[in-house]
Length: 67
View 1 (cartoon, rainbow, N blue to C red):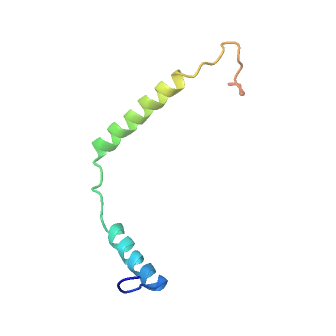
View 2: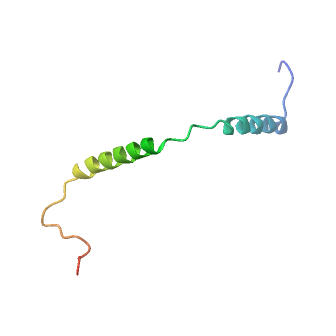
View 3: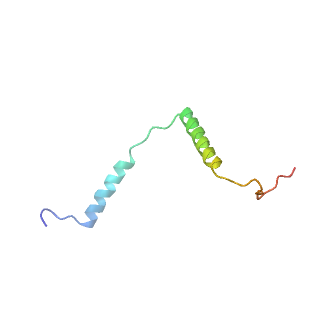
């Protein structure tokens, strides 16, 4: 092998330092309006997915509503 050899401990320390630097990058906090729009989009997307699932009309629910 050419060059300087690196030990596993040195490699681990190097990678741990790099991971710590990557962990320091902060993403900007979403604004309340952005959170609301994201939630509405998730609800819309989930509603479309549920609507695409076919359920026979004669299927009874696993629960009953009683007043």
